[in-house]
Length: 315
Image (cartoon, rainbow, N blue to C red; front, side, top):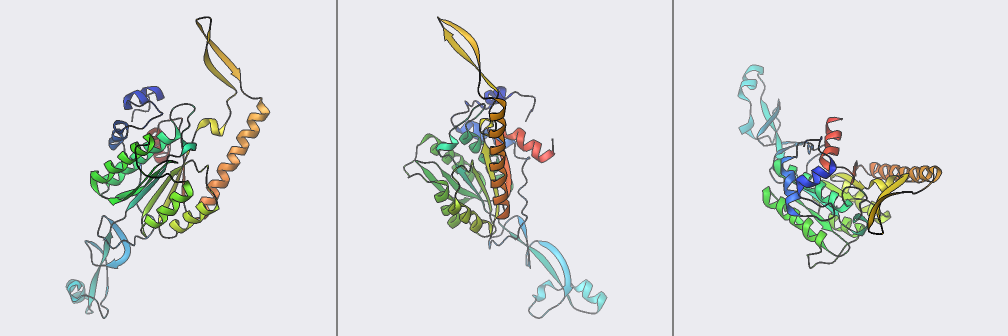
């Protein structure tokens, strides 16, 4: 992405308005997936063959090591060169290749339908989900998950290749526009369904503002993270984190437009509000870290690719 673009120029490039979710803006991200790393950091337990190397030893395509032959080893894996050189029977071990499903849980509930500068938080969540989805496809993994709002939800079992991605992007658009025939979910209910849907060894992304998180939701996340790698992505808006000193706008007076400015709060109130929000952020990130989850904070006030580049390249 050309980071020299202003935010408005970036919206224009995507043909997006910041408040709705359309397929063209989600398809745009298929060319911008190199800012993510889906390399697993936990053991993979899937029984299906795939593109990741499990820590368990077994038959597979990737050679791992040679060790002394043990009763029960497959005689077809005997390394005859090492056996002849050492005078003792040695066998080859291979690192098994495993498939790792990736699940994205995207929150489009009412608290996410807010934005003060660039995008609604719900739209930013959809954009981040699109980046992840296309990256999953590039790595040959299967994609599934949940998209939910207060009125609708879509549960998607893992599917591979472009079909899995396009199905997920369509679910984002449909749920954001309210074009499904399903009932809505709370964050806690969605996490309960994701807990049932997840397979051991999966990668799970949770995209939400976490405004509605409660003890039951944390219990679901704990259960999911016990056997899966979980990344919690909090989508926030700049106005939620800090009150600006003043707001500018346009006022109509006797058929004329005037630029007006209003002071929103005194410095002491702004500071107390910012400290409260920072404390809440810290408490939430600490709670999720204690559950073994990774933490990523994404602002709805800046293009998501620009933020991921800064994280990935340390800019």
